[in-house]
Length: 191
Image 1 (cartoon, rainbow, N blue to C red):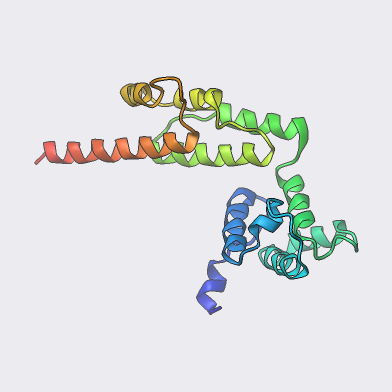
Image 2 (image 1 turned 30 degrees about the vertical axis):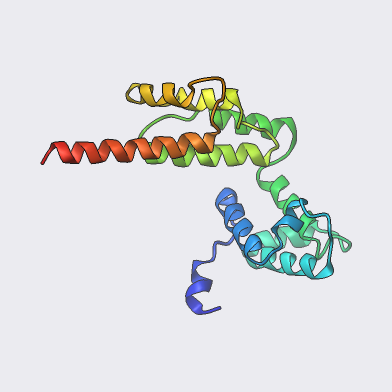
């Protein structure tokens, strides 16, 4: 790894958990350990356990390493699943209170501009997912698209046509495409 790679690494600090967990998931997928850490792969090997623990610890800020050092038991050292669970509990929380906070963030989404709305929607959806709350259903979709301004009314009708509601990811992709088409038409009209 060269010096430039080290400088671009995102270390977990007190206020960047959602950004960090996205980056660490990508790193762990890259080295073939994410399914193990996530619990999707039931096969536990010492190699995966140690490799994933090392990668997670490597991306922690000094204060977070101190927190882990104080909290983790001797038996849990080297256990990446337990480490990630501990960090998730610290930064996102668990249980009804954390789900309520995540839901409030989702419901308080406001449309300022399209890029910010998409970014905020993806962030709050990820936060809800981390607390175990699923918003990729008809209700979550409906709540998300109601935040869009009136000019997206036709797109909203197209997205919700029929009985199947799209996922939030499908909504963000459709809105981005619609915005790109609108911008292209606008620039062609002004020529």
